Image 1: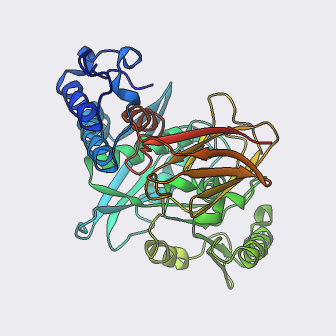
Image 2: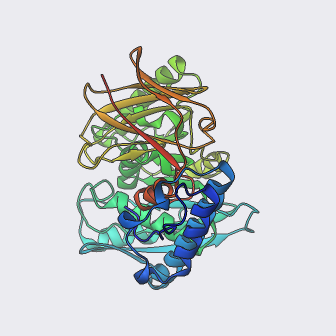
Length: 402
C-alpha cells in the first residue's frame, strides 16, 4: 500500500475531489521520509472526477520518476542490475534520433547456457553487436548465472522489469515500444519470458531456441516472430519451430484479432543463420504495445505473476499453469477461470466509461454491477505494484469466480 497520504482535516464532512487533489499535492511536497501513513489519511478513498484523477496520476508519476532517477542513476552508470545476491551486467548502444514519443528499447539475450563462464562471456560479447536497430536503445544483458536455463529462472523477470523502468526514467524510452529478442539459449528465454511478460513488450523475436514446456497462449496480444535454421536439429529446434507455427496459426484462426506471428525457417542454415534473422528487428519495430487490450488470455508459467495487463490477483493467489481469460465489450467485462478464484479487475477510462455503471460477469452470472470510483489510493497502490505509467489504475473491483 502507498505510504503517506495527507488528511483533509476535520472541517469538511464530505471532502470533494478537488480537496483530495489539493491534499495529495501537499503530501507530495513533503520529503518521502516525512510523509504520513496512508492508513490514517482520508483522501486516498475519496471519489475523483475524471479530470482530477488524470491530474493525480500525473503528479504521482512525476514524483515516481524523480525518485527513480535519484535511486537508480548509480546502477545505470555502473551498467549493472542487482536482485538479491545476483548481478546482471549490461551494455547498451543508442541508435538514431529520438522520436517525439521516446526511444524504442531492444533487450537482446545472448546464447550459451550450461557452459563455463568464459564461454557465456564470449556469447555476451557477440550479442552486443549482433543486431543494430535503425532507432532505439539496444541493450545486451549478461545472464546472472551460467546455468542451462540462464534466461528463464525466477530472477530474470524482476531484473528485466527493473531494467525497463530505469530505461524509461533515465534514457527517455517509450514504454510502449519495448522489444524482446534472443539467440540460442537467449531464444529459449524469449519463448519462456515473452508469454508471461507479454504486457511489458510491443513484440518479441525468437532466434534458434527451444520453448521447453511453455505455452503460446499468453502471446494473444504480443506479435511474435520465430527464426530457425532449416538444419538446426539440436533439441529438434527446427521441428519445434514448425510446431509452434501451426499452434500460432490455429490460435489466430479461431481468434483473428490475436496471435500475430511470423515464422521463417531459413533454408540451408544450421544453428547459425548468418545474420539473416536480423530482419526480425525491423519486423518488431512495426508494432507498438497496446497496454489495454479488450481481450486477455493469462496463462501462468512455472514463474508466476500476480498481474497481467489490467487483471491482478490478491497476494499469494497466483498458481503455476493456471489460466484466466477476460474480455471487455462496452461496459461489460466477462471473466473465465478457476472456480473460486479471486480476481481483481483494474479499471480506467480507456477500458470503460467510469461515469457509467460497470458489469462484471462470468459464465452468465453477474458478479458485480454498479459505479466504480476513481481514487488516489488505487492509483498509488497500482503504481507500487506495477511501477509503470500505463498501469496506474484509478479503480479496482475484486470478484470471486463462480
